[in-house]
Image (cartoon, rainbow, N blue to C red):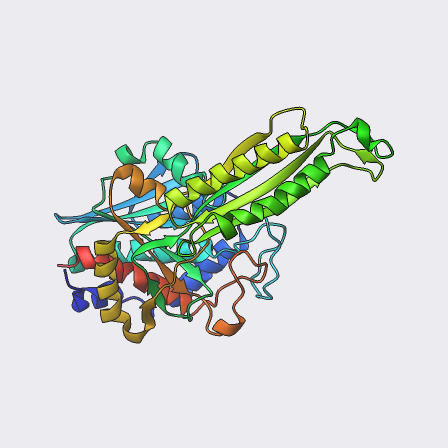
Length: 399
């Protein structure tokens, strides 16, 4: 496969004339963020824009959408954009900043407008390509629920099976207007674990009559630090974070239980399994050492798989990016954040790749995703986000 530059030029012929309209629509999405699995207004506006252009739009679950643009025989390419926001109060200083306690502080509004614009470009310029382009507007990424909900809602029967599945994410870790690719593990597997350990409550003046879950919890926190330091090979990457230890309500009361919130990250499924087994082993052992009266409880949630980019698909996209973007196409270092992007292509049994999109001209001052100040520059971010989708998909779809 090789990129047909004439076809890409034709698909992006409206880049200048649609810029103001695209920026205005982006600002609408930025100002109206919605939480995971509650993206009703967002989905309605996406549907309205697509149907107004005459594009076939299909609902998948409550807020998921699939846009199918069929154009003669040829390969089928699916591109995904997540559409949910975060429970964060924006502090970006942008004149169009969202108000209230919800914000697009991860950049999903960039993903929405980039894919929506790409759908319109493929629809308007059918003479430049052949095949089928599918836009997957996915809810609930931040809750690790949206991709699974679309699979459960029957996305496999609602849209044609793609030959490749593509995705991108706006970042502050690569220069603005650049795209970054990486074959193999790119985003880490992640899981959150709620651990409840039990003690025996008593008055603080009579500790001998109880079992103190605060001391037990503190011992567990310290012991968990040995997993990465002493059980994981230095050649592997792993993270174990205790984000919260909650127990008690008063200084002179030894409580009856404590709760720990633990998060793990790994780029390898076997390493992740080892982390979880080690956490459970250590917690149980510390409970036994502390005379805990009940077995600990483990609840796993917000689980994300490894994003392991297909080598051949990634190489093909990278070749096209190099041809179109030149020195604005670069390597993307693995990112320790996590995504549910792979859930749908894994369920469909199709290869995928997921790349990074630079969102800030002043990269040195760029905030991280999920920061209240995270609001990418309008340009060149929106133009590049659209172009990246068109270029990547054109690797398969151009004549």
